[in-house]
Image (cartoon, rainbow, N blue to C red; front, side):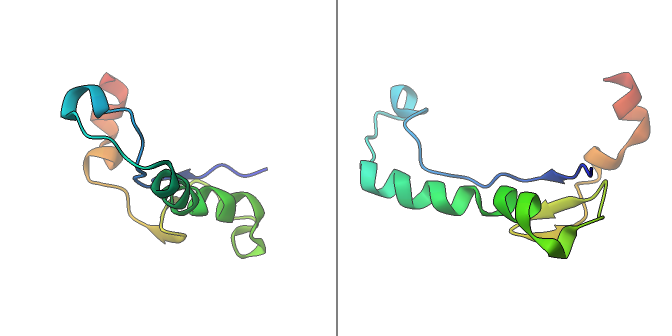
Length: 78
């Protein structure tokens, strides 16, 4: 078993409609949802990441987390 972290992507939802007053089409939501889950599906199914553990991924690629995310003292404080 492995555990990795990822940025889930930004997708169009209706979550902010109450604040912005904008409406989005359902068709666009479905298309954006597909893009938003790619990294999750990649990490769950790809043999390319088999055995890779404790890493951070964005857009199906391993990358460094932000400096704040790597701050051990801050993590202990939280």
